Length: 233
Ligand SMILES: Nc1ncnc2c1ncn2[C@@H]1O[C@H](COP(=O)(O)OP(=O)(O)OP(=O)(O)O)[C@@H](O)[C@H]1O
Ligand SMILES: [Mg+2]
Image (cartoon, rainbow, N blue to C red; front, side):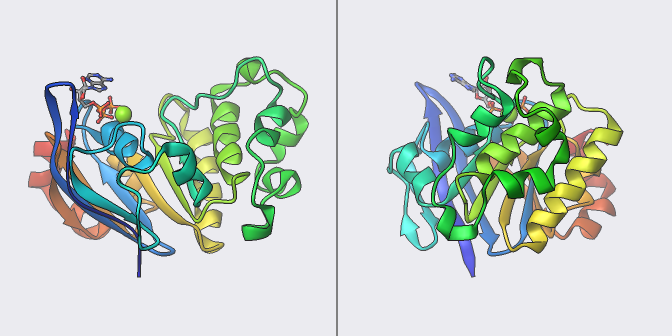
């Protein structure tokens, strides 16, 4: 069953026409990868789904309900967790305060401080440290932990590997794999195709505001033409 269904959306910034008829479907319990180079509209898609910049045309269904023109706070309340590009943690709050401000609907999936700390023990060690003084990797863990504290049914992660060292990314990837095993549905937006392909069940490649390729990760890995034309590898 589809948990998130984006159907033929057209999104603008003023007169700039960015998403030009984009469709995608995230199946429940899966990780869908969305790949594409800088500026193809990946974050614009995230903004459209979450309600920061709704599409002018098209429809977005989440758990069967139409969320196309729902305010973002209501979309989050209904179970959409966002891990934004660039982490966006609250810099002057402590690590733990960043988690606590997001806490809600614990009865839904049972995410609380304890469980976030079990997933990311490093965050417990750093619980009283101001978020702006955390390392990039720790801030990324915190951004994921904060989204989990909202007890989401679906997590959207916008370039979680950006700017991080391979060893840190490996730990993050293991954590994301665990989240999938716990039944969370995940839309993983990445520019780094090699990394994303290790994790995803299905993948879409974007170019100029449209999906130009869809397939299983092994199929994309073997498709040199798509990789060189749209992913620069
Ligand atoms: N707030 C905005 N106002 C006007 N144009 C914008 C705005 N945000 C993004 N754009 C434009 O929309 C296009 C898509 O940008 P977007 O941020 O969605 O790309 P992206 O695929 O997420 O890129 P990256 O991999 O660098 O994060 C770009 O041409 C960008 O300049
Ligand atoms: Mg982006």
